[in-house]
Length: 399
Image (cartoon, rainbow, N blue to C red; front, side):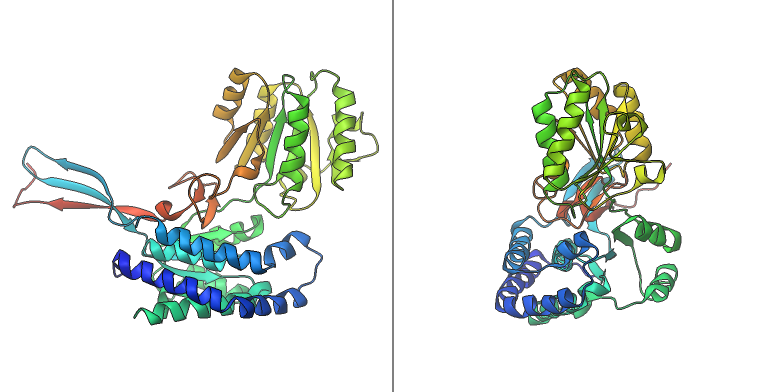
C-alpha cells in the first residue's frame, strides 16, 4: 500500500467536506428511497437508516475532525540502540486493506472511510441492502474527492455482494485483505468469524448490564437506568439487563417504583423467577438465551442477585463485553466491580450511553471493539494502525 503524505490525505478530506455540503439535498433524496422501501418492523434498524440535515452535518463534522487530527502513520513508538550500535526503531504503520461489514447506518460509509483513509488504509465497505441508495451516492462523493486530488477510486470502495458471494470473498479474497471488522449483530459476527481467512476484529454487540448495589442511591439508579435504556434504543451502548441486590432497603417498593417509571417510558419489562414474585404480572424469562440477547428495543430484563460476586459472574457469562455499570455509594465496591467485570468500558454511577468515540476523546469511530487484541473500546484514527520495526545497521551480525 503506497504511503501518502499528510497534505494529500487532508486535501482529499477538505474536498470531501465541500462535496458533502454541495450534495446534501441529493444525499437526503437518495436516503428517502431507502426509507420508503424499508419495512418498519425493526424500529432500531430504521432509526439507524435515517439521513437528514442533522445527519449530513454530523458526516461533515466527522470528516473535518479527522482532517484536523494528527496523521497516525509513521509515529515513533520506541527507539533503541544496542551496544553494537544497531538502531531499532518501532513506528506506527497502516494495516493495509480493511473490510468493514455493517447493517443500515449510511453514516458508517463516511466515518469508517475517513478514518481508514487518513490512517493510509484502503477500505472495502459492505453495507446492507437496506441502505443501497444512500451508500451509492456517498461512495460517488468519495470517488470524486479522490480523483480530484489525483488518487485512485480504489482507496474507498463499496462491495456489491450477495450472502454466498460474501462467504466466498471472505474465504478466498480476490485482493489482499488484512483486517475484517463485522459491525452488527451476533449472527453477522458468527458468519464472518466462521468464514474469514484473515484477522477479524469484532465490533461488539451491546447486551449491556447494570448492577444496583444494596448501597446504591436509588434516585441515581433510576435516572441512569431510564437514560441508558431509552435515550437511543438503536445504540450498541444501550442498556438491556438490570441486576438488583435483594438487600437493597425497601427492595420490593423500589422494584415497583422502577416498573412504574419504565412503563411511563413504554419499556417492556421481562423478569427472572425471583423478581416475578414481586412483579407478578410481568413475563418471566424461562429461556436462558434471552440473557445473551441484545434487544435494540424498548425492552429491559430485570433480575435479582444476592451479592456483588453473583452480579459479576452473571455479567461475565451473558454480556456482550461492551459496557457494564454499577450504581453504588461504596467506592471500594465500585472498584471491585470495575476491576472484575470483563467489558470494554465499565461505569460507576453513570449511564452506559457514554461508550462512544466522541465522548471518550477518540472522535469519529470505525466501531467499538469488544476484542482484547489489538485494542478494546472505540476504534478511532490512532487505533487503525499497526506497527513496524525499522532496524538500521552497518553490517552487524548476531554472535
